Amino acid sequence: MEISIQSTSALAKQLGLSRWTVSRALNGHAGIRKETANRVREAARQFGFSPSILARGLRSGRTDLVGVCVPDLEDYFLTSKISRLQQAVHASGLHAMLHITDGTLEGERWALERFAAMYCSAVVLIASGLESADPSFAGLRASGVGVVSIDPRHTGQHVVVSTDRAHAMKEAIRWCHMAGHRRVATAGIDPRSTYGRQRIRGIRRGCQECGWTFDQDVLQFVAHDSKGDFSDGAYFASEFLRCCEAPFPPVIALNDRVAVGMIQALRGAGVRVPVDVSVIGYDNADFSAYSDPPLTTIDPRVDILIRRAVAHLLPANGESEPKRILVRPQIIFRQSTADTSDRRQRP
Image (cartoon, rainbow, N blue to C red; front, side, top):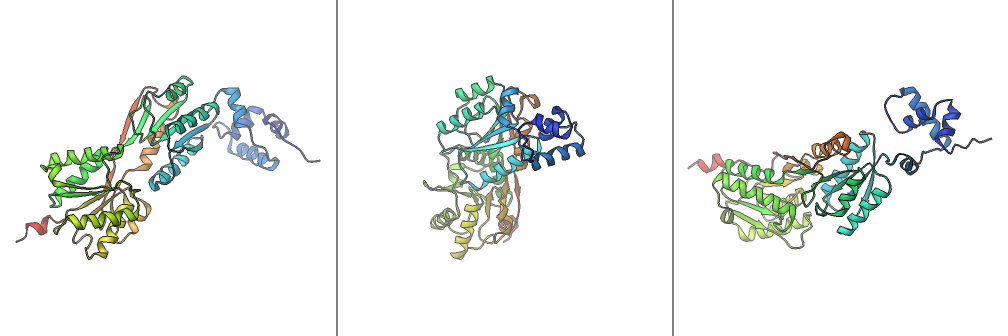
């Protein structure tokens, strides 16, 4: 006769263990011997039993689910964040539940309502467009749900973990200055976007520290319908060559895809990288080290960003008061940039 297991109590009776022991073993809690935990999980697999997360939430008022809300999956760098976030959440003993919105504020609000209805313990929003005073956040806080925003487009009344894009751009300008350059071009950094404004602010700071004049020494190439892809890099390369003459200023690109697309187009026009022009990307994408030449890029240090976000997921693990955490990127130097200071000092 085939045994049917429909509850944690039934599984505990079958194994001759307490319901408490079985429950903790299934949920990965500490305090259970490894051999016992393995025995319980193996029995659950054999009997095809999986405890109801929602039923547990109804009893305790909270599940081990973490709601993750993202605007889309088109952005290469965004998928990298999600992958690392899922791994970090799982390592903390929780389970990530992903919701992809339609890119609207109403879509985000709907996702937060669903997370609350499913008794999520915490919520993570990536690139959220919601204002800090949005009622959706107040409802979550009132329910004791931890809220962490990663790189939001607005400041929040909860824990916010962001990439310090302004610092990254300031450091890029300082390198350009130290390498002997006195001008710089940007490709795809749109001052109309939140992240673009953050980068422009850093470029302005860098110019001020180096004695440059932003309006005269920074050439900005922006496309209204840019998606930040390789083809956009080719377009920016054509605009760059149309407006600039040798000696060319270095280029700081929106991301690594734009940078690689630009390098290939420049090469096709007979312009050598880095002999004639230096190119700096952003994201430290997996392919950047294998481009031709290997791409100098700005690493936003996603692992640190995600670790700090997950460390503040649950109110018990961190402060319930609003807090902003900035993670400083670093420049990874490869072969797409060259120091020209020595050459410029020669007769």
